[in-house]
Length: 154
Image 1 (cartoon, rainbow, N blue to C red):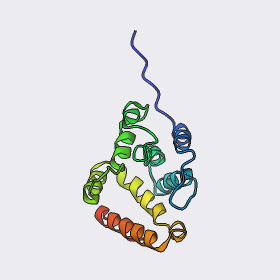
Image 2 (image 1 turned 180 degrees about the vertical axis):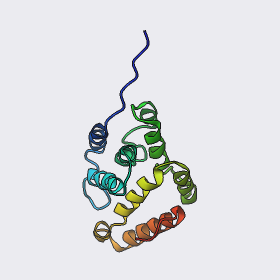
Image 3 (image 1 turned 30 degrees about the vertical axis):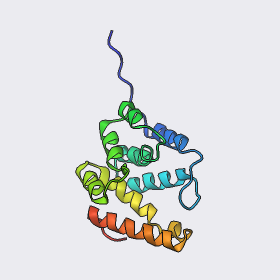
Image 4 (image 1 turned 90 degrees about the vertical axis):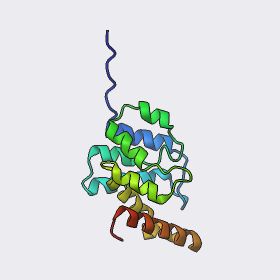
């Protein structure tokens, strides 16, 4: 008897999983991390992103933040395209931003996920609660990554 393949997780299940594994985490401004994930997923949706891109948006920081392991992602009941996008937008320790950007550009669908992530990260309201040096450092970093990705300045 052959083993039945797992059904892929639905977008609602991916959202619930992401909210669960990031439970108790906060962003640099002290807000619940799930707010950032929701904003990125919504940013992908309103930019015309597919359900797979929306799923990747919900999971975009899970491996980087060690909320989920690389091994979990490899074996997850997710389309390969979602796994590829999540890994593409996962910044690796010590990795030059130029290498990171090249991987995003080389992965179908990942650019839209990163665009929505950068848009939320660079939101002036979010940045306004940070101290000046942190705000300036992050703003410069986000602008540089946007330039590497060929994205216009907001």
